[in-house]
Amino acid sequence: MRANVLIAGGGVVGSAVAWALAERGVSDVLVVDLDLTGLYASSELNAGGARATWWQPVNVETCAATLEFFREHRDELSFQERGYLWLYGSDELFDIAKRKLPLQNDFGLGVEILTPADVVERFPVLDGDPGRLVGATFSPRDGLVNPNAVRQWFRRGAESLGVRFLNRHYVSGVSTARQPSSKRRVDWIEVTEIAGSDPMDSRGSIREILTKHVLPSSSVSSRQRIECDVIVNCLGAWSPLFSAKVGISDVTEPTRRQICMLSVQHEDAARVESLLSLGMVVDASSLYFHPEGRDILAGYSIPEEAPGFDFDYDGEAFFVEHIWPRLAECSSVFERSKHVRGWSGLYAVTPDRSGIAGLVTGFTNLFEAHSFTGRGVMQSFGVASALASWINTGKPEGLVGSMNRDRFSDRSKWLIEDLHI
Ligand SMILES: Cc1cc2nc3c(=O)[nH]c(=O)nc-3n(C[C@H](O)[C@H](O)[C@H](O)COP(=O)(O)OP(=O)(O)OC[C@H]3O[C@@H](n4cnc5c(N)ncnc54)[C@H](O)[C@@H]3O)c2cc1C
Image 1 (tube, rainbow, N blue to C red):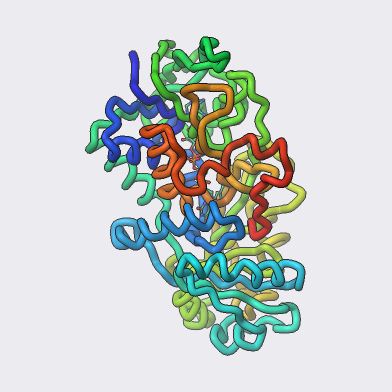
Image 2: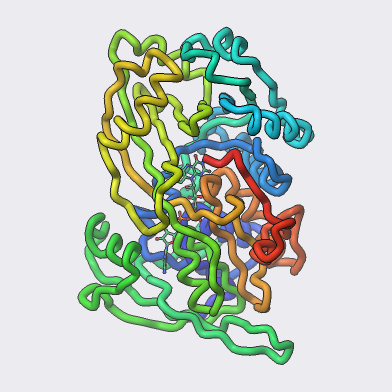
């Protein structure tokens, strides 16, 4: 088998890159994924937050472009432009947030500064002690999106433009060759077909392969080579495993992140409904939440979480220890809330909490787009468009060149994002 462009990984990022390439007239694009249903893909397991209010120009630029795309397809993607409310508990972060406002507002984001008193006046349901806050920002053009609809949009669009998606194939090997220029190129990759019924057991072979990186011999059906002119590593949290195969030691660490759904008491439901006018609320304690139907979706990133391919959800204990106390500080409606269910997925975390994208230095035909921490959905269109132009024309578009992995060898080039949850 061969392809002009082979994309390893068909999550939201790989699907977006495939669509953006096909849309630019690039033919013979092939996406390979172990499990296109995405049982363990971050694209299936995230919170649906969509904001362009970041601190690094490249993140603002690519997320603003993505949000514009979400607006154009508002109904198909269930984009709700209800804003992000950030509640700050320390001057240190709030001062930086205020300094970043002109950058964000140059992109037309209309971000406002609020005092703790403004917060209670505008959002009375957030009746926690205002003394715990030093201020807030409200960004009305941010909001919420249906991440699965986004991934499906790119996938359907790509397919309609001739992109092929190869499911249940695990990228198990890579062959590179040195060029006269002393750079290397990827000649072919080896893919291993995984046998099994469809959909595969969520606690069976896919989980085993994606967490332990072993291919159980009983599920291996066949191996083959796919030759390609260009390859793009879009393997998300698994991208370092691919990098290692071509001799690159990666900086990305897969890290578990948990989300839970909770319900409020019937008598509090009307007050919670007033939250529906808001998109995401991010509290000073790094808790984030938003209404999801009649329930509330809430997440919190445990700072001491060790890196690893861990999908175990801590259940009620996660809610009781990490979510409930923070929610109850924010609003009295949560005092009597109850844990309903939850799940965990992987963040692909880099040292500066920004993603990695571009042509891999030392290679002529190996590109990458991954490690978007908690930002892959809201950055998908912007990064994919810029990268597809780069692959198509040989030149980086916009600021995306700054996302090259080489930045990690020079701290002054890091794209540090501290408003990262
Ligand atoms: C709890 C949580 C909350 C989040 N909240 C948000 C949010 O609010 N907003 C936002 O924008 N982002 C959020 N994110 C981040 C976002 O989900 C990710 O950045 C994004 O989904 C990454 O997409 P991806 O395509 O790079 O990776 P993935 O979706 O993980 O896709 C990678 C694919 O690679 C495949 N794969 C892996 N190894 C192999 C192999 N060897 N061979 C073949 N296929 C392979 C997998 O099957 C998978 O389909 C959150 C993430 C989590 C976990």
